[in-house]
Length: 449
Image (spheres, rainbow, N blue to C red):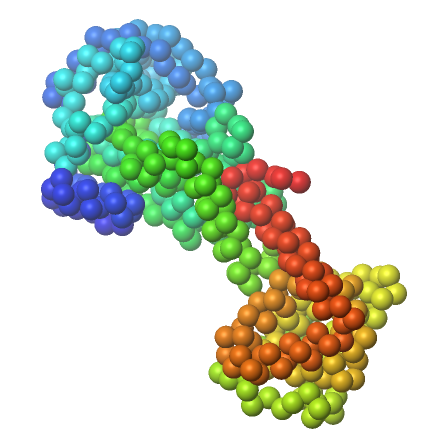
């Protein structure tokens, strides 16, 4: 994100908006041609926050935390301009000046002629213009909007903190079915890290921009933002819908939703680093076994000796330890027990394709029934996912003939290879189900189970 010291042209801004990246504009925000006094002509219905935090007043999207107050605007201005005479603190939030295609006249429609729209905006495309005014210092919750937004400060100052859409897991958005689904659940001033542990890393993904009078900031659609306003700050914002938003208002909605969820699901499944963090299966200390997954990385598997040449004695000491972990867990599973944590998944996560193939071929010749029990009875969902990822990696670095020979030996220990494949698929789908639960909760604030 940058700050422009000159107004962009309309074409430049159009390209900027298409990149969906925030941008600050110094010295070319909106202004009211008549200053503050023309505002005194209207009566409006205001929404104010009833909650406070220190010296700041909160504005939050959930209407249950607000009180709506009908008040002549001239009376409100008298309160604002006469500090010390009134104890009430109010925040004038999102009062419409323009609402395109609305049959009702906006409360502050008379002000539209007083507003100078930034030249880089296509005025005809702007669907909403709103007025914001704080009588004392105030702050909003963390939230996003379904519109593109240019927020300009007329008087005072605002500090805008922004997060990209993919920072949602760190911000814990409220459930979709809620009244304020576009808001974060976290009290960012006094966060409960036990309840919201990922919020500790939220600041690593944020951008901060201070917007002074006469300046503006472009807040892209879907970007989370939190706004601190100084005392007696007046701002005007301009909303308009993106082409992407229009595209969702079609019979393709369900298809788009499935594609988006599949994309998030794929990202959740392939991120090996998150596997252990998400499901807390893998907590065995790697140092206990001396594992180093990077010491045996190769570009080709075709020089691995054939199955008839592999025995336990031919394995390296590290491979022997990994084989022992697998056999121990299989023995527990066969006796109707559960391995503590998930050491097999940890082996798959930290073993090179070459070593894992050597271990499996050794099991084919020496421990065939244990290999069978491993696949049919001892694989957790996360271990099954990691095992298939290892097979895919083997496929990518070995010749087709070499891999064909490996799979021939691997599946020879099963009476019916289709049963083994079905067991792997069942556990992979169980893993995907857990990953989808995680996606729904982190990005949509919704718990499936």
